[in-house]
Length: 375
Image (cartoon, rainbow, N blue to C red; front, top):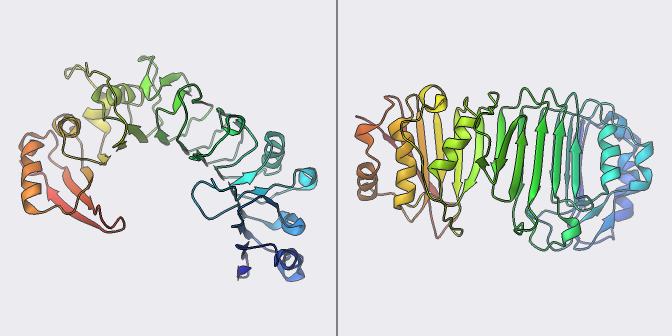
C-alpha cells in the first residue's frame, strides 16, 4: 500500500493484492482526516474489487475526488474498481468541485445519482468506465467535462453509444476521446444549452453524429452549412488524410475559431475527394485563426497541400506548428520544406513555422526548430 498525505490531500492505493486492503479502510476512518479536501483512490489489481467501505465517509469535506481502477491508459486487463451502488443514496458531496472516475464499474443510474449529489461540481472527467451505454449530463455549475473510451477488448453492451449534454450555461471545455468503434457502432453526441463553450475536441470518425446547438456534424463533416456556433475558439480534430473540404466545413460551422489542432492518422486512409472552392469567403481565415497545429506531418503531397491552404489564405495566422516523426530536422530537410510550403507567398505577415521532430527510435526525445516565415 502506498500513501501520500498532506493537511488537505490524501492519495491512497493498493497496487498488488488485497493483503493491505483492511488497513486502507482503517486509514480512511482516522479522525485526523475529518477535514480532508482531496482524495485520490486507486488500485492496480487485475480483477475487479470493491472500494473500501470508508471511502466516502469524508464526502462532505471533499473539494476534489479521483477514483481509479488502474494505472494503465485503457484498463483492458480488467483492473476495474467497483462503485458501491448500494450506498450511493446516503452520499452527498456539497463542496466537491472536481471529480475524476477512471476504470470504474458503475451503473448509469448510480452515476446519475452520484452527479446529482454534487451541486457545485465544476470539473468532471470520465475515462474507460464500464456499466453504462448512455451518458446524460446537466449542470448549472459545470465548466469542464471530458469523457474517453479507448479500450480495445470490449463487449458491445459495455460500449458508450450516446452522450447528451444539456443546460450547462457555464461549460467552457468539452473533450471526448473514443477509439476502436466498429462501423455499426459509432457514438452520438448532443450538446445544447452551452453558450460559453470555447474548447471542443477531439472529433473523430468514431463520432458518427455530433449535434452542437443547431449545427450537425457527421463524422467530422458539417451537413447543415447554414448553422453556426460562434462561441467555440479551439477545435481538436482527427483526420485521415487531412481534408481541406472537411476543415472548410468545420470553419463555416465554427467561424470564430482561433486555434485548430489536427492529428493525422498514419494508418487509416480516406477516399474522399476534395472539391473546395478557394474563392469562398471564410470569416475564420480572414479574421480569426491564429494557430494551426498539424500532428504526424510527413511532408507528403496531401500534408503539404493542407498546410499550404492555411499559409496562403489565413490572414492573421501567428503560428503554424508541424510535428513530424523522423530522426532529425536538419537544415537540408528544413530548406526542402520551406520550398514546398511556399512560405514566400504566405498571407500573414506575423506567422512563424515551427517544426517539432519526434525521434522514431526514442519516443520521448524531441527537438523543436523555429523558422520565421519571412516573405
